[in-house]
Each structure stands twice: as C-alpha cells, then as structure tokens.
Length: 181
Image 1 (cartoon, one colour):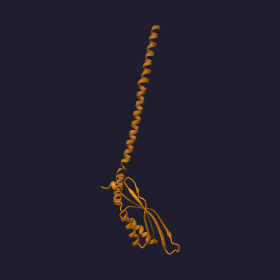
Image 2: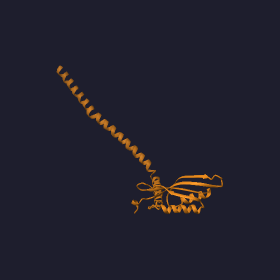
Image 3: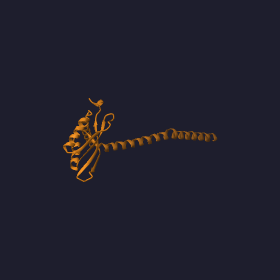
Image 4: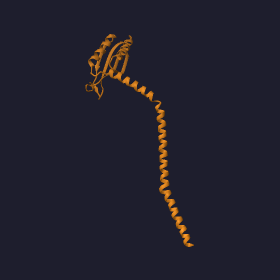
C-alpha cells in the first residue's frame, strides 16, 4: 500500500510538473504573443480608419498644390535670370519722373547671393504729394520684376505745404548665372 501511495505521489508530482511546465513554457508565451498580435491589429485598424478619413481631404490638398504650383510659376517668371540692375534703376527713375517726384535718389546696396536666388537692396528717396507717391508705389509693384518693399517712411515737409518726403527700401531679386539655361 505504501508502494501504491508513493506511486500516486510520483504520478501527481510528474503531472503537476508537466502542468507547470506547460503553463510556463507554452501557455504564457503564447498568451503574450496573442496580446501582441491583438495590439498590432488594433493599431493597424486605427491607422486604416485614419487613412480613410484623410483620403477624403486628398482632392482639396491636390487643388491647393496646383494653386501653389501656379503661384510659384508666376514668381519664377517675375524673377529674371539676369541681374538687370541698370534697367530696373532706369525704370524706377522714369516712374518717379512720370509722377513728378523731385529730389530723386536711387542707391543700390550690396548684393546678397544665396544658392538659387540673389537679391540687391535698393534705397530710394524723393519728394512730392502723397497722392503721387502713392501712385508711384502702385506702379512700382506692377513692374514685371519681383520687388519686396521692406520699408516706407513718409514725412511731412516743415511748412506743411502738402509735400511729403519718401524713403523706401526695396529688394529686387534675380537668378544667378549658374541657374540659367
């Protein structure tokens, strides 16, 4: 009887060890893999639903991209591939004369070169009525060259005769020689 009890105990210990081994080496690792797969599946489902929502916005984004491309193309046209500073300065002087602006001073500054774009700051001064100065600025912005007006300073003359002194800082752009072609 003692022999049978020992045999049963050994069988129980072996069975218990097998159950513990199964749980530790088979069930728990598989359970962890299942959790990982479920988390991955949830993340992928969220990504798919987000992509579906974003897909609706795609036509609007394409239209916006086309608008930007058209805008960039017009800017490229307005940035000449030659320096053309003399021509620009002559155009400005002619505009000032056309609007009867006196005491004209047009002084280009030091050229600033970057990889794809170069620019030249230009300081301008003149005197005239506010309406004529305003019209000069409107006409200057209509030139076929891209101009960035950085600063405009207007000051009344001392005797308040309706004349103003204008000081304007602009920057003109051009594409360097290496980008031509």
